[in-house]
Length: 297
Image 1 (cartoon, rainbow, N blue to C red):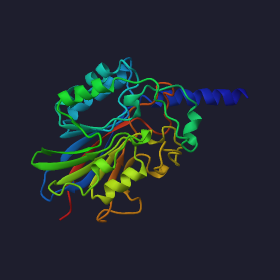
Image 2 (cartoon, helix red, strand yellow):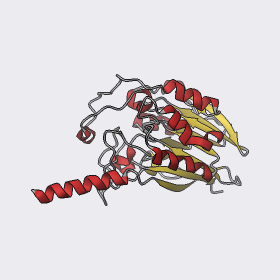
Image 3 (cartoon, rainbow, N blue to C red):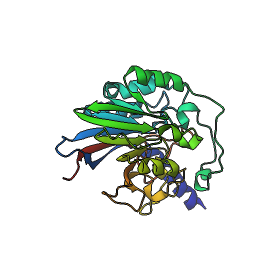
C-alpha cells in the first residue's frame, strides 16, 4: 500500500517535471519546387499560456533566434483571461516573421477542472463554453503584426520567391469549422499549399487531402499527453488514431509520398497543458521546425 503511494507520488512528480521540458523538434519535408532554396517553417501549437508561466514564455521567446521564414500557429494560445499580453510578449520577434494562424477552443473559452480520465473514453460531445476569453484582442494583435487569419478562409503570400497558398478552418473540436467555405482545389498558382486546423479531425484532413493540399498542419492532441513508453499515445481527443497523435505522417494514413490524393500531415504535441492537469508522461512539450526542401526532380 505504502509502496504504491510512493510510486504514484514519484510518477506525478516526474510528470510535472516533464511538462516543463520544452523541446524543439526538427523535420525535413520535400515539398518546394525543384531548385528552390530550403525554407524554415516554425509550427507552434497549444501554448495554453497563463501570465505566471515565465519559463515557458522565455523558451518561446528564444525561438526567434531560429530565424524561421514562416510561423504557423494552430491555436490554443490562452489558458487565462489575462494571458493575451503574455502571449504577445512570448512570441516577441516571431511576430516580425510572416505568419498564419487559426484558433482552438482554449482561445475562445477558459479551461475548467474536469476528470482527466474522460480523455480515455469516447468523446461525449460535451464542451465548456461558459467562460469566454479575449480572443478578439489576440486576433487584433496578430493582425496588427501582419499575420494572416485563416479562420474558415483561404489566403496566399510569397516568401523568398515561393508562393504559398493556404486554407484554414475554425476549431473542428467545437464544430466551428466550415469546410464549405474552403472547399475546392488548392490554389494552382501556388508553389506550396498548406491546410491549417487546430484539431486534426478526419473530416478536415480528408477534404484538404482530396483538394490537393501538399501538407496539413494541426495541433490539439498534445501528442496524447500521458503516453505509455514504447507504446505511445492512448488517445488524441478527436477521431484521429493514436498512432498519428504527433509528428510527421501521411494522410490518408496508408498513402505515401507521390500518391496524387495524399498530403503530408504534421501534428504538433504542443507546448502546454490545461493548468488543472500540468503533467506529461513520455510526451515532452514541443515546437517543431519544419525545413521545407525541394521535391525530387
